[in-house]
Length: 266
Image (tube, rainbow, N blue to C red; front, side, top):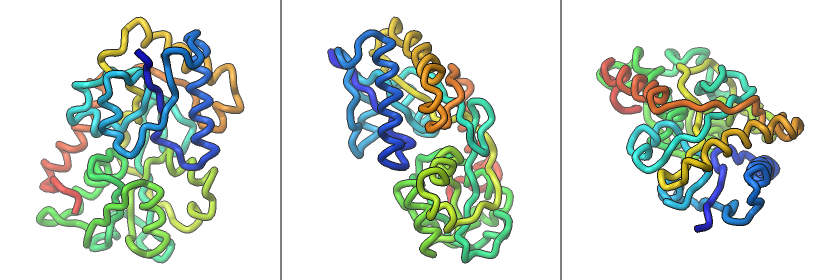
């Protein structure tokens, strides 16, 4: 079998996508395969299908789909620790962002405004925003509408262009936007952070042999130790191993929003 590897979640720019592929090549060399038996690939547009492939050896997913069915198909490999505002160890936050045309200085002041949301199954774009807005909702409503954009980058563009007023953006994505898309970063404004939860995990198919998983974990940390410039560009500090019990924090945030009478972002 040829195993597949792809790290698609933070490809903010072509150069950043190339750096993620470089990290994978470091790992393959450490495993002693260097392209033989493992192939770095383009996952395509349907990430949910890609994450469920039985020949998946290394990829990265969002914690929300992980806890809503994906965990039945995959095993956790590692969770990155990023050097970015809003990150603390393996945890990350959503950055609350408005367009520069918006006067609101707090999320509470955004009542009735349009929210931009990348995906309904995004932890950083939907789940933590729902949790943050829940205390201010009335009869299950807080925003004046929700625009689904398809990605954090498109959510930022929606804010910049006035198609929406507020969004929650993965703080790691936001840090990469400042690095690689400074004009877009300067076209929006930060007003706060959401609650923290475990960051986007690296995963493998449940069919992947256990004898490869621990060497991959070691190779990831060895790679960023051996190539400091690459680690700096990727804002990587280290990788650690979390459990599904750690990721239950994501379900806790969802349950708290529902208990507050705000089950759906709106």
